[in-house]
Image (cartoon, rainbow, N blue to C red; front, top):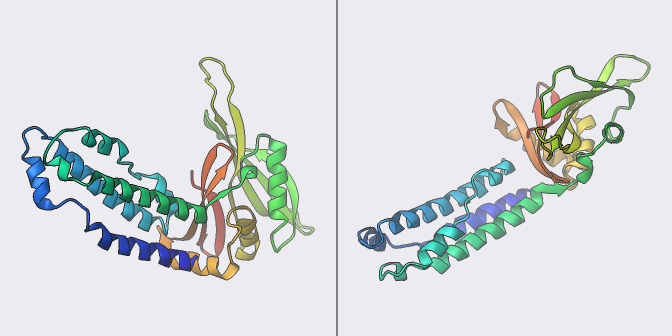
Length: 274
């Protein structure tokens, strides 16, 4: 992972240098802006360049928080196509193909980057309560300590679109709860006004414990290539609002799930963030 981060940063820094070769000249921008026939074109070009710059910043920020990729990544295709259709001497001097090449580079970089974070794990979104209990049992069986299933409980608090449950486990002969897996269910699709049912998905929303109990679960279901010491070093050296964290974007059936592994007060937690 460290080599990936270095490669991404190296790519961005080298591209910033290369982009000067074809990014629009400021004098040409002034010429376009002063063209009475193209009063909006100059603003469109500034928008394209500004948002392409922002895309590079998002790619860099996503090294720490991959969800950044899904928040504001800009596609300039429509704006470029619209400008290409205009007939103007000043616009004819603009290398629109260069913008398209830069956008393609960003898409390639985004795809390569997400390959390192996204993990298609359909089992994380299941359609029955029995299936989510089985999933939780399989998850907890990986923990260093040995837990015994002790029950599935629905919380009294719920929302129209979301219900909450807990699956609890004991350890040894004691009846005290030693480990808990929180679950939420959501309904996707459907229309209540038309009395059309959607599809219900159950998914793990939270579990907490010691690192050696949590890491094997994280490695098996969220980050198959994770290394126990590397994850520990990464998470403890990054901080967000008082939490030491590591993120994953999981593609589960039709759902895009954003999970965070974080550390606080000697407790490690895997939590569904959205």
